[in-house]
Length: 69
Image 1 (tube, helix red, strand yellow):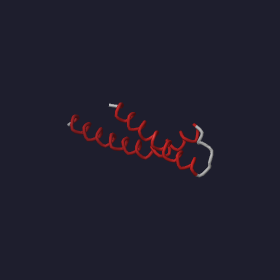
Image 2 (spheres, one colour):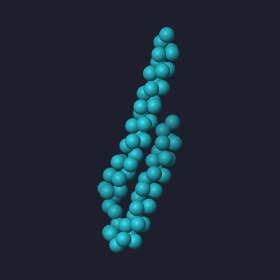
Image 3 (cartoon, rainbow, N blue to C red):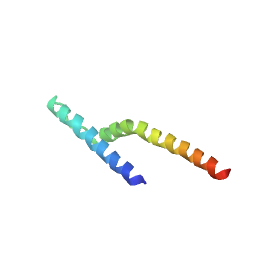
Image 4 (cartoon, rainbow, N blue to C red):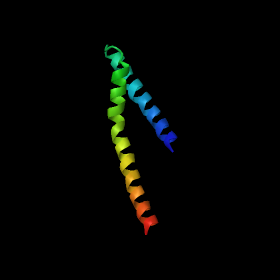
């Protein structure tokens, strides 16, 4: 269940880090640090995690109501 989310996260991480890093190097800015990359990654992925969590919560409530009745 969690494996697709991990793969999506890895793809997002590489695209977020490699995409801007290439542009930053062209602009003459030093390469981004691991901490900055992780911070950018967390800020970018947080809405997705919240969305998955709310969807899971909604499905959980629906299924719980169906099984209890």
